[in-house]
Each structure stands twice: as structure tokens, then as C-alpha cells.
Image 1 (cartoon, one colour):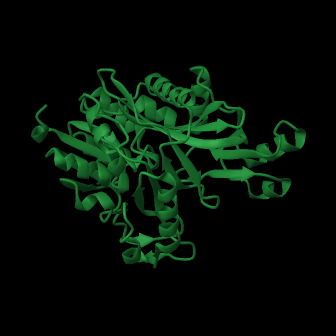
Image 2 (spheres, rainbow, N blue to C red; image 1 turned 90 degrees about the horizontal axis):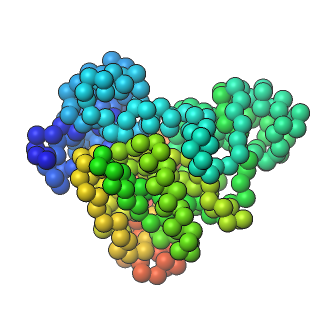
Image 3 (cartoon, helix red, strand yellow; image 1 turned 45 degrees about the vertical axis):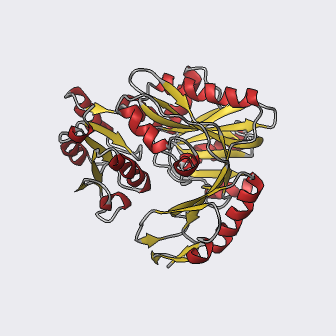
Length: 381
């Protein structure tokens, strides 16, 4: 393929779009980005930036008409425009049929059941009044997890009910109600698939979440799993990307229960927070693998070069405004620490402002270094 003549369109110009553009530049691949914010992270590194809303029909349709291949860095995009573009011959990867399932958590859960993919038990309710009534009647047992069917992103739209006193704070809107799984580990597998049908998995990683924001706080690679469970997690990811007919990459987040069962939590058909470490710690990054997949190239080697721990740099609670990074210089002297600052001009509580991957042959040392950075590097205003 002649990369110099391919126009790759990306819906969304956040940090994922930025990192995708940076890898594309290594191949002299032209990248076109659509985003509502002219100072989004990808605006400074793409070939051409277009100001527009990826949720708006007219903006997406007009943008898509001028590229050869269209992909995403966020799944909440205008599907009607994508279906029309696809009908008119624009190559869209992943396709809008998969995005239609992923955008709606209720449809996503129902899809897993229809494909006999293991997931936790769930019910769907139109609003919080019906949820409260179902608790009162005994149809729902506390504790449980409420997930808004649509619009949830980066930890938002998820609420854990551990006692009756929490029912007053239920989220408004159609929701999936899931059993609260007794979790041993939360794991993720990034899997890729190209149009030729070649599938490749990155090794599973363990995710540790911030209890306040429900955002990944620590990511540990490799995950401490026995060979059988690791193979099972990868096979489940492969089944999922095949069932969804996704061309590109798919992050499949899973629960390992204390009973030893692996259950799909949810999936994202794009580069993902749980794959950031691959930039520095793997033979092929998730971003290069994404490009290889959507361009119908052979998948890259997913071997881990070194153990690593990734932490998110989150906006600190109580701060909102022009960002400054307190403690950055002091942390940069740590051996094996790789810093990725996304370039977002403003910080706000729990906003993802960057990430740090710590490389170390001893994973316990990597964890200690990552904890030091997390305690000393602060995104504040």
C-alpha cells in the first residue's frame, strides 16, 4: 500500500487520536482529525485538523467524504452518518454495526449473551424509579452495579450501590443493572483483527481502579495469571472481536472472579487506556497494531520486552483551569520512567492529563516507583 496517498480520517482528537497520529507519522501516513476543540491533543500532530463535532451528522458526513479510510478514537460518534458513508463506499474500520452494539451497554450485554460469551447476570431498566421499585420487590439484590446504557465514558455513568442509603443517588436514564461480581482481578486483553482475518492478542494485563473516579490507577504487565487462565482470556478476546466483526483493535475488559471464572465486563473498539504501556514495553504498540489492522497489514509482534507498570496522571480534585504539573521534574529522574503528557490545556478533577509507564525487570520495583510518581506528580491549576 502506498501510504503517502492514503488519507486516514480519525473521529476524535483526544490523547488516543494524538498517539495514533504520532505512530502514523513514522510511516508518512496522512492523518485527518475531526474534533470540536481546536486545541485538542491531536490538533498539533495530525496532517490536517477539521473543527467539527463527531456526534453531529453533517460534520461526520462531510469529513468522511474527504478521506479514504475512517476510524475512531472514541465510540460515541454519529452512526447515521457512518452508515451512509459506508453505503457510498467509504472504508470504515471498525464498522458502524459493531459501534452500534458497543455504544449501548444494554445492547452490548445482550450481544454477549446471544453469542454465548460469558458475562455477569444483568437486567435492563428504563430509569431509576423502576430500579428502586425492583429493589423494593426483591427483584434486585443489593449490592449491585448501575451502568447507564449510553453516554458513559472514562468512569462516568457507573454507580455502585452497596446499601439502601445509596438508592437516593441512582443515575437517571436507561440502565444496565449487574450483579456485583466478587472479583479476584480485573484484567484486559487488547486484541487486533485485520480484514484478512488475522487475529493477534497482547498478553493480559491487570487493572487496579481508583475507587472515587472508577478510572484505572495502576496497570500491571504482565498480569499474574497461570498459563491456562491467560490462554482462556486471550481466547475469549479473540471470540469477541470475531463475533463483533471488528477490523481494528478491541480492548476486552474482564473480571476474574474469586471462583476462577472469567467474565466479560465491557469492550472498546479503539485504542484503550489498558494498552498505553505497549508504547514503551512491547515490540509493537497498540497504536501501530491499530494502524496495521485497519490498513490490512500483517499484525506486529506483541511480545513483552520488559515488565511494566502504567499509571494515569489524573487532574487533582479541587482544581480546574490552566494546567501545571507539580513535581514533574523531580519524578523525571526515576530510572525506567517514561512520561507521556497529552497536551490538554485545562485540568479538572480526574481528567486524564497523561500517563507514565515504569519499566523494570522486577515488577515490585516498578510498582514502588509508580507509587512514588503517583504520590508526587500532580496535575493542578
